[in-house]
Amino acid sequence: QVHLVESGGGSAQPGGSLRLSCAASEFDLNYHVVVWFRQAPGKEREGVACISSPDGTTDYADSVKGRFTISRDIAKNTAYLQMNSLKPEDAVYYCATDPAFRLCAAYSRRSYDYWGRGTQVAVSS
Image (cartoon, rainbow, N blue to C red; front, side, top):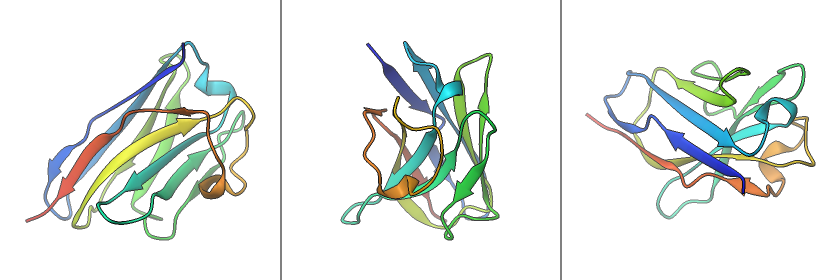
C-alpha cells in the first residue's frame, strides 16, 4: 500500500524558513510527478509547487515563486519543499503524486491518486 508522509511543518515567524519533507513508501517518487498543495481554513486547496520526472523540471504558483523550492532526493525517495521568506499564513501542506503523471502540466487542476495526511504550517508574529 502506498504511503506518503509529510513532515517538517510547525510554527515560524514571517520572513523565516521551513523545510517540508514528503517520504514515500511502496511507490517510487523518482519516476512520477510530485506536487505540494496547501489549504487554509475556509479556502480552496492551492497547488503551490510541482516537480516533474525524470528531468526534475519545476513549476510554482505565483504566490510562492522565488520563495519556495521543490526538490527530490532519489536515494531517500523523498521530496522536499524549502520555504523561505515566509508570509503570515495558517495552512496544511500536502504532497501528492500519481502513477499516471510525470510532467507538471496543469498540475494544480489534476486529480491525484496518492496523498499524504498533511503537515500544519503556521506563520505569524
